[in-house]
Length: 204
Image 1 (cartoon, rainbow, N blue to C red):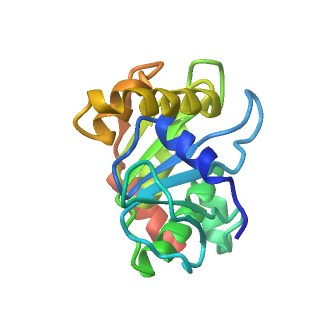
Image 2 (cartoon, rainbow, N blue to C red):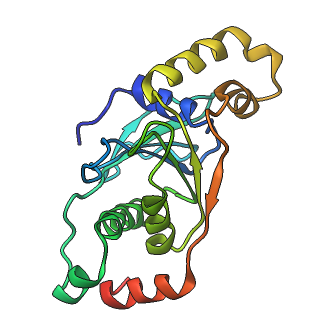
């Protein structure tokens, strides 16, 4: 599959303050009053699987021994009429992510944590409803880390990392310190009853 260049993926990770392996960064896009666009992803990993289906692979990463993936996000997963009628737009989009993540996991590449970044509505806010949908559909916790300009901020963090790496014990520590979140990180947990209903109507 074709995707963003590795520099853009690394910037996405850096802007979100993420260097840990198996953590999928989800960059939101869109404008106030418009439907949420299909997001973009990036993930660091220690598992090198160049021929993996459903993800773009790059053999370089934020640290030595790491590689980088961008997981393909199906825009329109096939759902039964019952599911289509009971799921929100955000939840249907998250079902696509669930299918993509399960495909990648089945090929031996772990995906354990999820971070949402970018802005999708008014300047200075992230669509928490979308984060909640991901948490409910994937039955996981989602961290929300604001960043107004993911590409620009990520590139700046990577530049600072190249200059100041020796000051930190690890790349992960450096990325977290340099990212300087623009707003307080929030954590969104799954709602068990909603997760069960989504699983019932989607067969997940």
